[in-house]
Amino acid sequence: RDIALISRVGKPVCFKITKIDETGSEPLAILSRKAAQEEADREYVSKLTPGDIIGARVTHLEQFGCFVDIGCGIASMIPIDAISVSRIVHPANRFSVGDDIFAVVKGRNQGHICLTHKELLGTWQQNAERFAVGETVPGIVRSIEDYGIFIELAPNLAGLAELKSGIKVGDCACVYIKAIIPEKMKIKLIIVNCCDDGCVPLEAPYFITEGHIDRWVYSTPGAPKYIVTDFSE
Image (cartoon, rainbow, N blue to C red):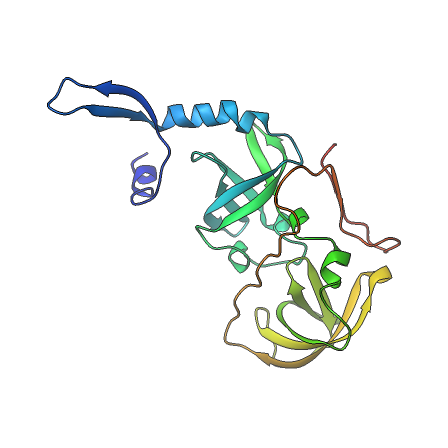
């Protein structure tokens, strides 16, 4: 408990005034963080349903996910594989502590709210429409496979380039868009140049920030891989 209190020094914290003690020379407000959280849970969190879009603040990052405050210090987590469609090795590739973000309620587990994030970053088609064949754009190397290099153009969109020596995961890459194939959800890239001095994560372009989602389909019509999130299940 002492460590938890120390970690909040200098940070805003929600309290509820439970009593005013006027026995001393000056009035003293008696505060309760627990009472504030119980009220937030009763009036807000308990009413959330799968598919609801909410605001959250990043509190800390672990290898397996991003922890957030969804209100009054009530904690929740976004698993690393729910942060974006484009794979990342650590949530720090996408977020920083203190970031104000949006998330979608996925469900509940033992009374705790479970969140997801990738559904707010647009479908394959929505992201691909931001680019055009013949453009040269920046990207981040996210994985290197035997058959090519995956380069992230946006948090929910990656393309494939041919293998090239001297490149590693995390490098910034300047790539030429050779082809965009919606029916296969593929983007063919050519690496123009690459630098290994680190890269600022691409900003998450939220396509929706409020309301409710019943069903989200990432894939294009007829694509061989069908990616969907159904919040009504």
